[in-house]
Amino acid sequence: MPVKQTNVNIEEIFSWQNIILYFVAINLFGFFIMWLDKKKAKKGSWRIPEKTLFIVTALGGGIGTIAGMYTFRHKTQKLNFVIGFPFITILEIVAIVYWTFFK
Image (tube, rainbow, N blue to C red; front, side, top):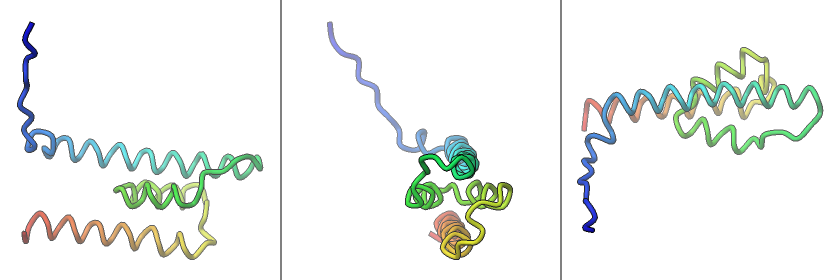
């Protein structure tokens, strides 16, 4: 029996709907991991590595991780996070605006 091939259109994968869905999901995830790490910190149990928190921020979850940082008052005393999360997020926003309107 022949295998049916499907042509995948890159524009369908990267539609505005999918991009918005991705950013909503990654920011909810960022908010969640900040909550989870704070909860684990209070219990003194295994923690989410700081590198992971920065990776989620760099993957587009900056708004969620920043919101989680201040909502749960977690990592607010660490300069790397207080400056790093917003810096990464602003760079991403500038890149998106440039890529969308000026390229």
